[in-house]
Amino acid sequence: MDSYIICATPRTGSTLLCELLTITRVAGQPDSFFMQDPSAYWQRVWGLPGSDGAGTPSHATAFLAAAKAAGRGDTPVFGLRLMHRSLGRLLRLIDLAHPGLPDDRARLHAAFGKTLFIHLSRGDKLAQAVSRVKARQTGLWHQAPDGTEIERLSPPAPPHYDHARIAATLAELERADTAWNDWFAVQRIKPLRVSYEALAADPAVQVARICTALGQTLPQGTDLTPPVAVLADDTNADWIARFRIEQVQTE
Image (cartoon, rainbow, N blue to C red; front, side, top):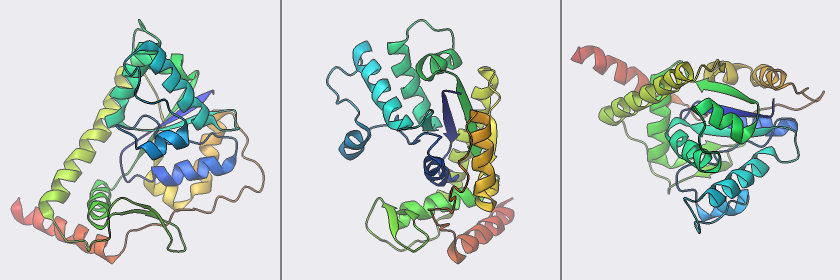
């Protein structure tokens, strides 16, 4: 395989999986290179071209080349994390650089070579929705095992239960996951399926599965201790239980 795309939705462990695959030193340096409106910071880190000439074939070609360089690093494989909401933007860029191709699968193979598609999903969608709502409220998205904050998107704030917001987020996440599955079917893609639950339970096994599918050998002695902590706590459990009770009461 030349590349892989982690087809995910938010709060499925994609940051953990990206970090672990980077640690292997044989499976790229995956990240969200085609997110909507990346900040100037990430544009610099990834070496992406500016907006001058955006919408032209030359800009699209330069953007794809820069993303591939960042996502490959010093390894033989390019890695990409892709949320469904960013799929359209990526395909439009590829269509500019490689026009006239018959379908999305052909476009992605033209841009990235022989590609492994990994569907990263979470079986407990309610827990996923609660995690997303809580992260948005508190501003804390990722934390190291020692308590050091890895990613904070807003100033600290206390979480508060919001049934309507959880319900809306749950529906949004279910739609996005269904959209991935529908797209796989239309594009005749059989993804390697990885669940959040399996990744959390034994990350080394899931990383080894991916390396094997890529045709890469996981270096002996690689330390795959999760560098990202699980943020779920009693608050998450309380919200999940309360939401389920309220759903039953309204049926």
